[in-house]
Length: 87
Image (cartoon, rainbow, N blue to C red):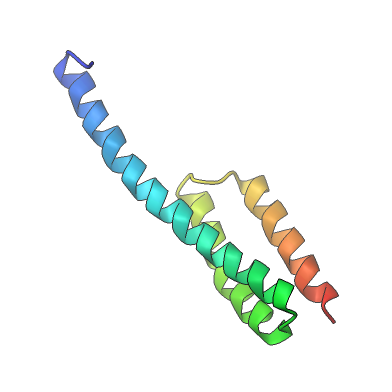
């Protein structure tokens, strides 16, 4: 357990950031799942709109430090290529 005032404050901050980051990660995963479901169902229009909505969410996750830049780029690349392959 934290003993010094500084360590106690860091523990409080870490707990608060954990909740925020968890919510952001969940939001991004939801957007990615919507794209996956649209691709699986074969609905090209829904996949395109879901992908368009997921892109800024994923990039926001990069700027907030939830995902690494290359991880987000890889996810977007794979989803985009799968959505394009539906044609």
